[in-house]
Image 1: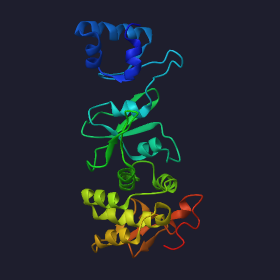
Image 2: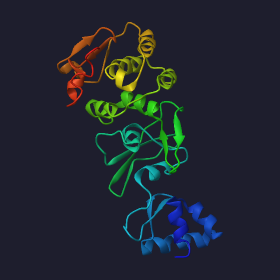
Image 3: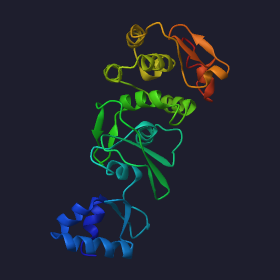
Length: 256
């Protein structure tokens, strides 16, 4: 138990972290084997370990801290970032992780950790609890861009309904970094339904609209086989009434 409390303080750690504690590579290897055998620590994946609480018998690190430590510069993204901020309608048994460090999806403690290639580099911060996460505006754009793969449109809308402010300058900065016309279309269309709640000015939507060209896009794959309508303003094929997809928000889009 000599090093246990220090490992609990670290929560997540690598083999090299244990070597720094013991000052000896061979001692570190022996310690890891012994502590795993006694249930003091568990292996999350190759070269990533977590300390186990003696009280709860579960990992002392939560899913978000574990995800942050998978590889250097990894951060929580997409729906998992909404969860971290407390803006998710549902908590998934998956954690979405982005960053330069790629990894093969894996499962630990009934949670699946999934890698998603980053679209932009800006808008990531390290929080006081050690979690690295995309900021709210980065998260909103990632989630709009990928909702057909992660979470779905209804869950995205429910998450957005819980947010009471979005920084439109950041949104425009990140949209420029994305450099995708269709994302300007989708973002303008979706956020215009929530512009009062998110406190986004009309100027934001005019900037988004100015990026549009003549091409018509679908809000999501497969909508052409469902009831739909053409939104002339955003040149998008969309559901007949977007906000009817969620239980509340019957009058959210009354002025759109």
